Length: 317
Image (cartoon, rainbow, N blue to C red; front, side, top):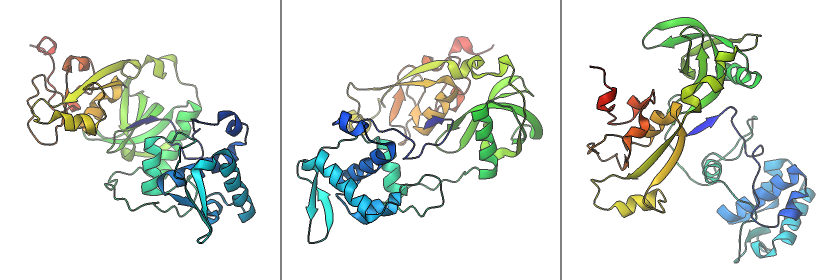
């Protein structure tokens, strides 16, 4: 789950170096990207050839040869040349010189590399992922993104389950990926509140050329600015909690997350976290329990969290 204002590409995100920082940081950004790709291919595929670089970056064979030679000069233990197949293979003492973010690695392996242009990006390894059933239309998403970037209101036609179709003006400032669909967080001039709008329910977005009012800015969105601390532990009903600790990399028996109140309910739903105060959900999909449900007090979308019940004092009599 991500909170984003633009969708990052492989080329747009800066790699943090774990070794040889001065040598590599003195290079151009384009050359660093090519070296990071060599590092990635060796680490996760085990080999790289000149055609791989040429196809990915559009460089001439001579340029690809220079990049491979430079990588070999910087980290000779990482790369070996297989003359019989004219390909470079991972060295026996390989240690990555770039830090590769897990989500980016998995995305690249499953979808291939791409920068949003019309290229035929192929998966690097066989990989199956759940199909995205809810995909925003680009002619809707693009104006919304421009409005976020320009900090401008946008007039939309919106369809909601409760009110049907309506014309309204919103002031968007962030996209939210719930894991199942995309929302835009915005101030809604019709209701006078900050709300989430499902992007697939928006039609005919048109930017409004005016500055947002002071009360429409995100620093006035209490649910957005409030940070909620969630402590997730293996579900108490499970006989082998140590397996769950392995699944989630729990070093001290729990996962402590700091998230915006505006997305807490979505996250707990996506992760199938039992948020009941007495860990009463028994279904198999609930492997985690929210150990302190009171952390959700005042969170508007807490009702989305599986099993959540508001504190007795908060229930109107």
